[in-house]
Amino acid sequence: MKIVIFKPFSGEFCIGKLNESKNEIENVIILQPVPTQEGIKLSLMPFFAPFSETKEVFISLDKVVTFIEAPEELKKAYLQVTSNIVIAKNDKEVKKVASFVGFASPKS
Image (cartoon, rainbow, N blue to C red; front, side):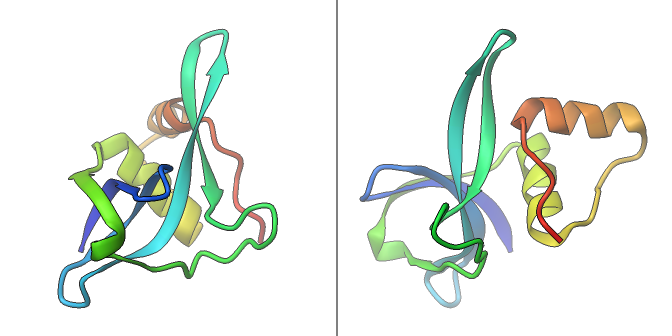
């Protein structure tokens, strides 16, 4: 499955796993731009935040305006947030992913 950035008709920028066989995007998370002194960073938020922390959100492709494959740093950050697995070769790479996204660790 590909990890894609997409925009549903509701207008948010989101990220999720494209499942072409089911014609949907799975495990949808909202990408929220956050201005900082260093520039714009992205915060990954559960789709129904603050009402629910569920990651099991599915959006049918017929409700999506467009999508693109996510850049590598964003894919790694998405996988860390959705699976609690850190995908990095060293501390420098972990800091790069965290800096790119500006996310807080998921709750256990």
